[in-house]
Structures are given as C-alpha cells and as structure tokens.
Length: 159
Image (cartoon, rainbow, N blue to C red; front, side, top):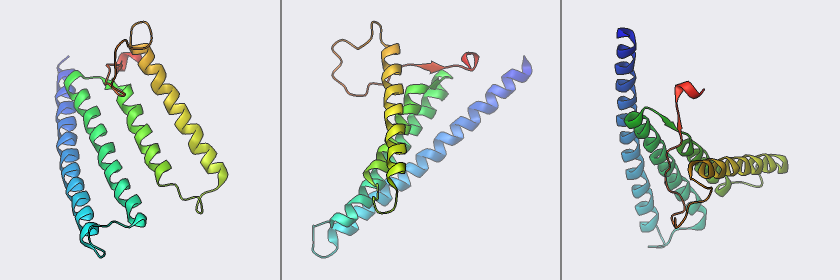
C-alpha cells in the first residue's frame, strides 16, 4: 500500500501542476482577447468592429470559455478524485459549438456538416441523459439555471 500512496501523491502533484499551467494559459489568453478587442475598437473607423473580425474575436472568447471548463474539470478531479463526466461532455459541446459558429461553408462539404451535426446531437443527447440520471425522478424541480454542475462521477472502479 506504500506504493499506492506514492502514486497518489505523484498524481496530485501532476494535477496541481496542470491547474497552474492551465490558469497561466487562461490569464494570457484573456489578456490576448482584451488586447485584440481594444486593437479592433481603436482601428479606423473608431469604435466599430468589422463583421469579418467579429468571428475571430468570438472564437478567441470561446476558446477561453473552453479553457475555463477544462480548468473546472481538473479542479473537480483534484478535490474529489473523480472525473465529472458532465463537465467533460460540456467542454466537448462548447468546442463543437465554436466549430459551428466559425463554420466556413466554402471550405467544408455538406457531408462534413452532417457529421458535425450528428456529433452535436449525440453530445446533446449524452448531456441530457447524464443530467436526467443525476437528478432524482428525472428533470429537476424549480431549477431555472440552464447549466448547473451536477456530480456525475466516473471512478476508476466503474470502468
């Protein structure tokens, strides 16, 4: 059992290091988004952002949101020693949503759009089923928030 305690300590150090690295990346990314927005606002004509540049800005913001959700997933793992499946699926949904928002219809074929749609529907179904399974009696009563974090842990013993 001594080996298991050493492995657990190494695991905690690795996860804590990942949290620090991801937090630093998110800080730098947020600063980059703020800098990009300010650069666009001050560019001629002043205080207007061209529609072509909006997609790039939205993409940058969504990347920061994806990073925040990844950080939340890692923090939950560090605190509770479980992987929250709902958070992982949520990160995937946000990443696919980013792809949908930035979709270039001239670059990709119709079949690729159908594949992306199938992936999005599949993830939405998985998210719904996880939420339904996590709440007693199905849907939550009186819950007005669209995305409340639930505890749907995935332990090593479950796999």
